[in-house]
Image (tube, rainbow, N blue to C red):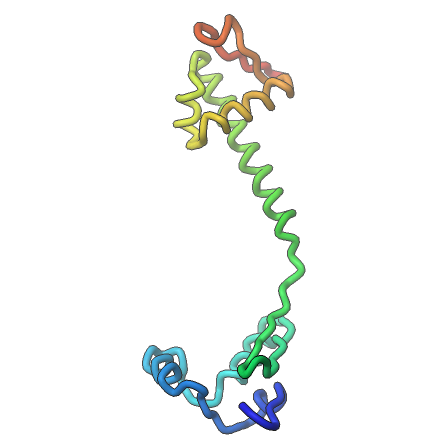
Amino acid sequence: MGAGFTPETLLAQHASRPRNRNIANAFFKAGFIDAWGRGYKKIREGFESAGLPMPKIEEAYGGVQVTFQRNNVNSSDTTQKTTQKTTQKTTQKIVELMRQNPSISTEEIAELCNITRDGVNYNIRRLKAQGKIRRANGRKDGSWEVIDD
């Protein structure tokens, strides 16, 4: 890279001169490079075939800086939906375990649901608040009652 470098010149036919021949040879021998001078062309073709915007390629800080545009995916929405589904499955499993064994302990529920006791207690509080379960006859000698709608 030097004078005359532009993203357009990289994407056009050009002579290939690796900055670090040792790294380039290692990539070639590992099979990551099939021919010299085709990398940017392959990048362009890959992005075009996937319908993605081309990355921004520029010379910066004595090297090449490539900026990829991220898809507009709201990961917090995805995470929230996944958490809601997982919580719903866990609460359903807890209710089913209580139906099968009304005297089941929170330790047993935690083990069978593969969650912590704190996780079990959180779900039990929610289920109680929703009116779906209740504890009869105390903490130690009591049992779970599942309240059907």
